[in-house]
Image (cartoon, rainbow, N blue to C red; front, side, top):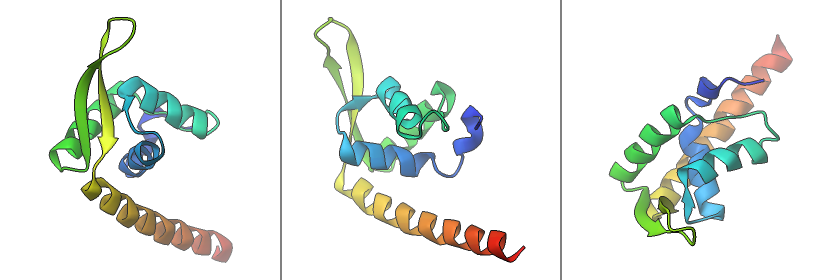
Length: 109
């Protein structure tokens, strides 16, 4: 249903929520979780997710570190920081306000 770029404006919220529930995920796992938890409705592609992760890391919302998996491959994993939890709370409040307003318009029209 949604195109990969349709997450604009909500990608930060989704990534922060996922990392609050499942710390230590790498980028591909975050993309898969968005797809799975949305029942295959939402998708984030690498071209959207990677810049978002770098931006969130620079903002101090998430922490990234390199780990070596059992397979010997290296992966960059991400964890939520305290500032990310604060941002998540703010993003959730904003999302609730926006969806409530959209629902009011849909009921009115």
